[in-house]
Length: 334
Image (cartoon, rainbow, N blue to C red; front, side, top):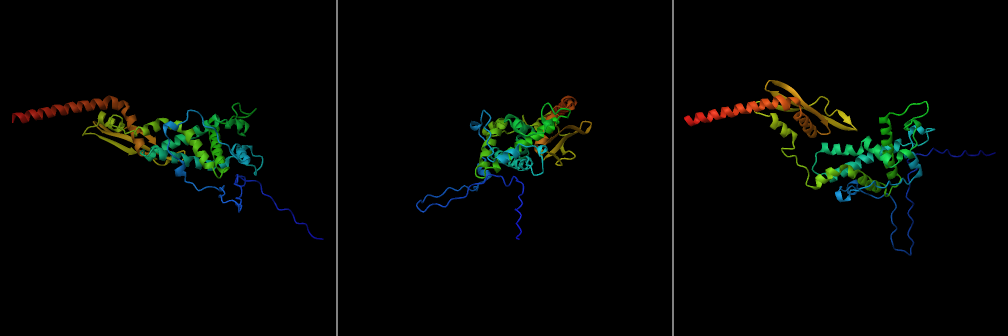
């Protein structure tokens, strides 16, 4: 009696297995000379797809939400990991991971193409504005993804009966994750046009957030003149040949991170007229140059600056003027 072979074991579905696949190419018939269009994933460059923002193309309304073509990926993108009933069930975590990468890449390319003259610290600040949790979670709510998502009951505004409600920051993070996962689903479910569709959508969605900066760039870029530059303004307020204004790195500069971006801290120190290493202002930002400008801006409003140090400079300059007048009179007498 022959033994019956056991059926082959099947593995649970995974996100990789469920991406929408392009159909197989059909061989052209001998009677037709027209080439068959390719449905395989095209070769493309993120650089050429991400063209710069211009004010005439900025939308005045919310752009439509592109669909996720795979029902399995759509379900996964909108399912919180806390709702998984078994380890084989899908949730948004994997799509959120890859969506986060897509968002950072697309935002970086758009900013790089639109603002050719700003320093890297300012580019990082603008990118952080586009991809931070508060921005992405707000998008989830505007598109109604919070109502479509399968969340644990504690994420509801009223909480669960006899249970606790999720902290506001936890809700914000989860809604941002859902948006990142949705972006990942849009791209991964359409190997031909998914990335292009995501770029067009996100460019329209993000553009109004940077409208002021885009207008400045189209006007020739903002050149900080002497009146606008806080460092120059601080020098004009209290600077003199007998004093020293120093900009120094703060402890931990470059070691603190906000949304994976390093933060740089700069402090403004003053020495002179009886003061030694007096800290007038400090600030943190994504670049040392911008941090220094912000620290100088704070120093310009420091009570010591607007009060005693300004008066000391006036007295010093008056004394110097008297000395110069006396020297000139002495030369005339000779």
